[in-house]
Length: 374
Image (tube, rainbow, N blue to C red):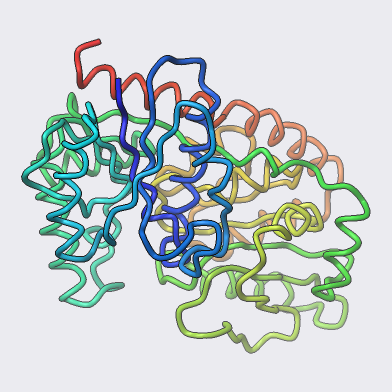
């Protein structure tokens, strides 16, 4: 079977989707299978030096055995919509997998599989412009109609897609992602270097998240104010990090600091530096940061919303994302109890180890085979 996986979404513009696509492609290259992979890239210069992707080195992917690289026009261009079907036909592709809901909806000579991680623009419409919501809704409807199989990242996402778009549940496959293998307990030297680089305090809670409203950082800040109301001088620190659309976040609190975007290479040690990881999101299609924190041995508190209970299981303290007092109480409990944190660390490491990209690749390969009746 010739399998085409679209790598054109591995770019800084799609940090989460890029990570999913890169991790899946990497795992596919080490599977024990006779199937062949065609990895589709953009023609914007040499893939080893592209400026559109500063996070991931595609060299080992495109040079792997049973892999052939094919350059196609950018996916959002008219040329990309027209040229890709012809290219796939030319190289006799059996199944095409798009990790994003924008792909050629007509003219493909082979079945298509699409990954739809969540439908947040439909569930949180106030976070997007009317134009963005209309584009999302139309594109998703066309993708769901055109694809033979749909992959999503959690049972919660599957249920929401079924409820909102009326897609039969039988057409949707749930495939969990995983933390990358580099997310593991960091060496003391790496932790010390990251602490020095970012001027981190000895004890702090960490939240790695974007500044989108549903990520619920304001409630976390309110919980921190409640937590530290009577102890301003010796209050613990809350450190925020992650992609920002509107510049660094600012708070009227002397013990909350936003680092903004963090180098990918620093993330494991940053997780490992934290006393606690807190993730109060109101919705996640999967929720990778808590799993990465667990894999690094950091105790996790996260919300009981979206797919987070699926991912965290019993290894995290779960709280109502709209209850800052409950969030403050959970943080206070964990910070004050080292025995609890040790138990959470052990449970988190075990939980994170139950997810793997190899298994995700195997389950995704089974979706391709199901499409073709293998």
